[in-house]
Length: 89
Image 1 (tube, rainbow, N blue to C red):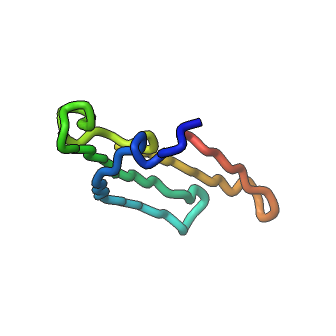
Image 2: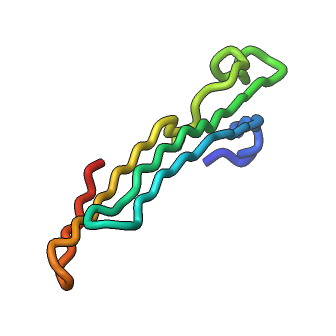
């Protein structure tokens, strides 16, 4: 183990932004919703020395970056007591 761990860890900056849209239908036999999310999570590690730079000091996607997400959910009322749920995406 390294006695001076702070010499092996690089710090950086991060930024995140996004947009979320949702359309929902609640009346009738067929109900449900469609939602779309666009989001970005980016990191930038720009050190003094070339060995401390990741991706040349430019922003790069984080491990948990998920730019596009689409969800479609529908519910069909078969009778007064039975509803069929479908998760399409």
